Image (cartoon, rainbow, N blue to C red; front, top):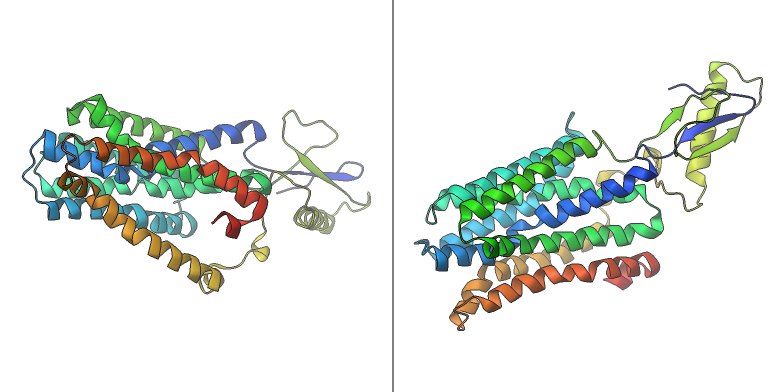
Length: 346
């Protein structure tokens, strides 16, 4: 990197993704969440299609195993995708998202073309579909392109999109009773998401810093800049270093509602420190207590309702709709988080 000094200033480019692009990237990330992140939670609608419409010979224990495979991959994929993005060379945001969505596409094609009683293909297909949550995870840092006052709302909207994707299987079943047509067509949608991820997502991270060399000219772009004054006689390499340090220090120290919330590595707690914290432990405990019963609930809700007389699947469909409808409240909860804090919103 080089710093071009004019009479008394150097310029620091703020986000790598400009303001005019970040809203588009955010829209794409939310669309991806709504179409792929939580597909496995539409399982009740898919199970009913297999049992009632296609007279599958699989047992309820086997259906439970199929959903468990998808549920486990949906949760674990986020962990492994995060590790891959941060620690494996070449697996940045773009590559990780594309690989996860490609696994979901393969799983969707498996659902489309396998037999209704093919246990192993259904299990592997649900496992592949669950991996789509990895793409959801690596797109979350797009919120860092926006001011701190908006990040809670953005992240909660992502969560709402995750819930909304649980409606996809029900919509596919309503569009066509032929799985080849409905799920095969949806695989095309996932293909477009892969292409969008490849062209729109950054190779590594969403926020980077660049020192821009501009000598005496106006930059022909809409990017924002910070300026720092330096003595005119500092024309050596040491002066360049001093300017860079001054600019970065100024950027970190100022709390002016900037749209970029970059933290230098020395300002960020290391991973192990965060894992050992009480906050992390309590959040993990809360999440585990909430999620494990919910997995069993979603896996068996169709069977439970059928045993109580839901012969036409009306209440099973209502469950899927209500599950997705929580997306409506997600931005409001995020706004409360921004205004009053995470504890109040919880």
